[in-house]
Image 1: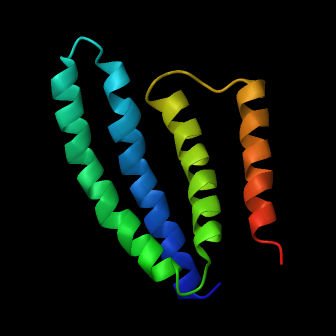
Image 2 (image 1 turned 45 degrees about the horizontal axis):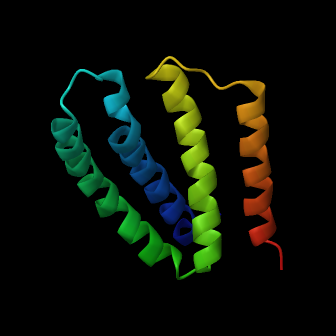
Length: 113
């Protein structure tokens, strides 16, 4: 696979790691004041944007916007699945995997001509 097709995927992966921590990392610290959780999440989200914007900019040279969004959704689900089990200690159940699989099929359909 050529580099111009791989770089956007790697950047999307990195951005999703940051965003998952920004959105869900605070759930492990429920005693932290909500305002503090919001501020920390915004700080983490800055780094997500530093990767997401170039991912979409570079990716738009080889992928359509719907394809980039479909990839991003699948990457988000994969990152979240690992994060949920590893960081939050909440492994996904069969119905979660089934729902995610349906979303992955939808993303696959986006790539069909």
